[in-house]
Length: 423
Image 1 (spheres, rainbow, N blue to C red):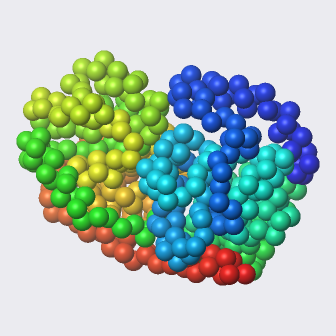
Image 2: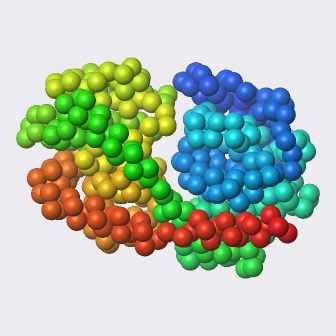
Image 3: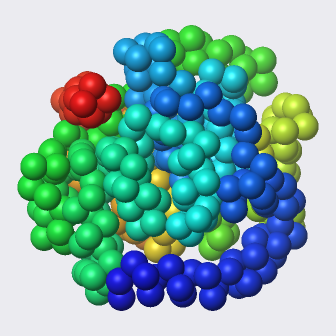
């Protein structure tokens, strides 16, 4: 399939796209807002001529944050426009940057929508986070002489096979990229085999290792636990959970309560549209549950704290003694394992980690990551950390070493972007 056929099929699919958007709006009303932006209508009045950064959703927005801050410092005269595709991503961008960046949804990948968007923004450089590649947006940039960089680029074997099936579409698109800053050598080679130019592909590492934690965060967490009279309670977090995982975590927590009756689980669903249903699930299963969004403190008898706020995940990690990272007991591919590691938490995860294979392998080999398949294994692993402080300390130290040993990717990426900005 080439780009012309892709564009035709995209136009034919527009009714389905709109219906899906409205269907999602029933569960998350924010999807019904700013629909015009998705077709490049009603865009804000942007200051043109700066940098355009696309981060599809929450995870990519958080990963992009250090890069964006450094770009603002290195190029203070250039406006920065940050786009995303989801309401949660939009809220995260606003929370991270406020009015210091320009923001809208990225229009759908239709030539006329991409053209209208680029005409409004007129960027000197486009930076796409990870692997959110859109053929028409990239081609429209190429026609205008706008270099496009793929930052923190990742490409699993599974994704590479998918791209290869549509080589007539993906190979020309990859060849139009000016820089592919790949996380690993294996991923760099996959991009080359799919049609990227050798000169454009660089191995820079993952900028997720360049994570800086405010020392005040842990102090705030300790103070809040004291306020809750929970300094000595065993607390664990199940973060970024997806459908099908909450039941497993609650089952593990039920086992832990047998030996640790005062244990507290901080349960944080990945998507806000699931906050209500997970709260009801926890209550239905008999757990005394409070919601973080209501400011309800966990009392001595509280068993589950639902983390139903936005932008607090790092703080919630800091509140816990041990961290489980979701999206991994179901085949979602996992989520960022480095945030809890950077906070000195022993990290647990499920087996589905295809989005973070290299990071997971390094943490696992260092003894900083424990993988589990089910509720009994999860409960046993957490119990092992709680009952053996030396074991927990070794995992914490190992995670911190992995983090420090891999830092420097952000500076390598910024140097590559600087060359494109200056060209």
